[in-house]
Amino acid sequence: MKIAVIGLGSVGRGVLETLAGKNIGLSVTGIADSKSGYIDPSGIDIKKVLMQKKKTGRCGDAGMTAMDVVREADYDILVEVSPTNATDGEPALSYMKTAIKRKKHVVTSNKGPIALAYKELKALAKKKGVALRHEATVAGAVPVFHTLEQGLAGNDIRAVFGVLNGTCNYILTRMAEEGLTYEQALLEAREMGYAEADPTYDVKGIDAAIKLVILANTIWGNGVTLDDVDRTGIDRLTPEAIRLAEEGDCTIRLIAEADKSSGLLRVSPRIIRKNHPLVVEGSLNAISIETDLAKEITLIGKGAGSIETASAIIGDLLFIAERYGRRP
Image (cartoon, rainbow, N blue to C red):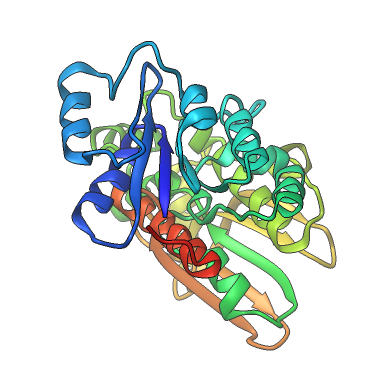
């Protein structure tokens, strides 16, 4: 199958590097970054484009936009991995709608459009007879949606609980391990590359809340939004709070939780026993899924990283290739 890739940040590069290193029956016919685009119906030399991007900051023709690639390239699947815009989902939302209207499948890691317009996008994809896959939007390499849709098919999903933000988990881990203040742990997280210069999105619980919305809408189709999530971040936690939890053989983690029966949607620091499966270290993510048949299933893995996120995207691409059976 032929794919077009929109976005050449760390995730986009990870996808392309993976495709260049594995023969999995996928060819790239269109690429775009924020400044340029490149189309070649016969297949793009990925290594050459990545080298050009590194040297010039552009992947192709400065006169070609990402929307040009979406509208004009010959592809079967659009891989949309541009930066997340949690306010209105643009421009990614328009890229996805345009591709779906062209009867192209869409695979994305972009949380904004999926959190804001999943129901609309899913309905449009169904109408056009194409797939919309978004494994990479929640917990990076952890196969959450594949597990829910295939492994737990036939189960009634009653609730989900998760550690969904690696930055917060790293900060809380370091505060517990070394007695660091929040400010000291945040500085260390920045130095390690886990936290952005402006960490608000992570430490205020916004990122985890967006992922919770995506989970709830995908599992139950209830049309919730970020405003429906009761949210408290970790930026006011003190070493004393961590120490008190430790004295009771507990610790503190930022937990995102959604419950079907009560309608609860909450992200907040929670005191939990150290032997609880959600007590993962460093930047790991973990999700516990409560069901009627399988009871409780917990998934743990890398929640971020270019290659780790690329793993989820490749999984979605191969799912579509197998399901729809069109290969080069």
